[in-house]
Image 1 (cartoon, rainbow, N blue to C red):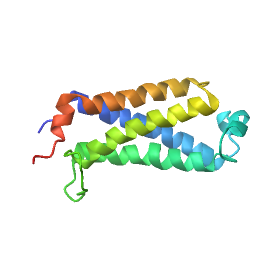
Image 2 (cartoon, rainbow, N blue to C red; image 1 turned 45 degrees about the horizontal axis):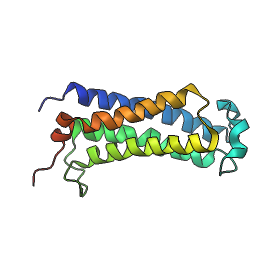
Image 3 (tube, one colour; image 1 turned 90 degrees about the horizontal axis):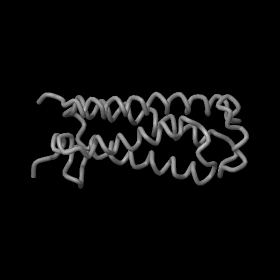
Length: 147
């Protein structure tokens, strides 16, 4: 089955998220004070003493997971079989969940530190696009599991 243009847009959005997650996560882990990201001034407003935990979250959840999901969506490997209660292929379900998690992560940021950096707006738009592209009927239908 030929991959649709919207599926490629979804994959591109996931890769874009991954680049940002890897970049931010690595910077937070190499400089837990946040100075390299010019975020040291907001650290007292957060629930953590440094950026190590947010760095791991960004690295794994927003960096590596989107790459794995992109692979799952495009290659649909047969050797990965995960249970799915939503009657859709696991990578589609996890992609939709990741888009929702991204919006919730940004909502938490907005609550704790506000929206001060342009990357937050770009990331919010990307999160909404991931959700939108996942829910477009042709993408959703492609990943339905027949009952």
